[in-house]
Image (cartoon, rainbow, N blue to C red; front, side, top):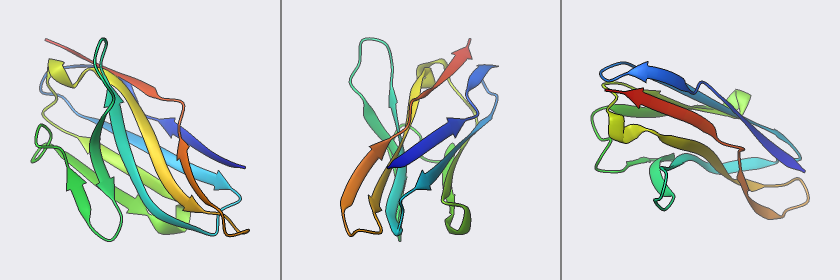
Length: 118
């Protein structure tokens, strides 16, 4: 089994910052990539940022969000600056993992709520 545990969500005013963290644990041989998705009320889940040997950002967050990774800790971070009300959503961590048994898994965290007030 592999688990992802997220932290760092909360309520901030527009223009503020938050930092999300997500740590993977369990039967892990290697992690190919980790990323953050978000789902706002009434909308589909969308990819916000992803990191492997390169990084990807959605256009809506480029220049404001930074994804980083601590491979030794199996942890991914999302630094979110200049937050806007439209960034309000539940943020989900995602990881593509190879288990010690050689299985390829895609794992999701439980989600953390980010609310930006105007």
